[in-house]
Image (cartoon, rainbow over all chains, first blue to last red; front, side, top):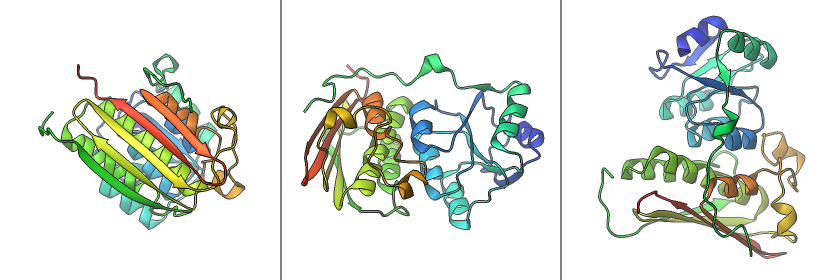
Length: 129
Length: 147
């Protein structure tokens, strides 16, 4: 689903388009817990969140997320928008709750993350002292 | 790799306690450098996430600390060292959901007891050592997938 379609379905406001509204997203994830996002999201996931602090942008950056939708009309501050522009992460704002926004996107065919593709690792050392 | 490099590239970042505005800048810079060096996106991503979780841990829990990164074409080594309370029970700290973070940190969406398990999830090698009352040291290695 293209970001422009996400924008239309959620009747969202575009805060940062980063020239990427034509970009396709294949899956989405909704969370306020940064660590859940870091643990669960594959790259190019669309994130829905109710958090608007600067670490949301940093979390999206290191996780290579496709875009961020702020739900419940929670508007991030100008420094957040400036950082997203600098990094090139699209930001959208919608008035719907997380549940409603997720439901609309899911019904329109945007799936959740693929659980069987959780980040792989080939751990040696096992976290021992 | 777009940019050939033969010598080890070393980066170092000083981290300040409770600096939630700058938090993540070190990891962001590490990610940029790795991308520029031409590492595979999966390698860059795993290194960036592990570095970010380690950076946040220092900022949340310690008095001060630093991230050191040594990059070679074969692997990325990230060392996070801090002066802080240390971890008295590492086995417990490695369990998902165990946390000692205060409410203020949890309100930011961190401190859910996922940081160390996440680092272990993304790392190819992971070692932690800690001395209660003194500090904690993490060694994280991400293989670059060559050879």
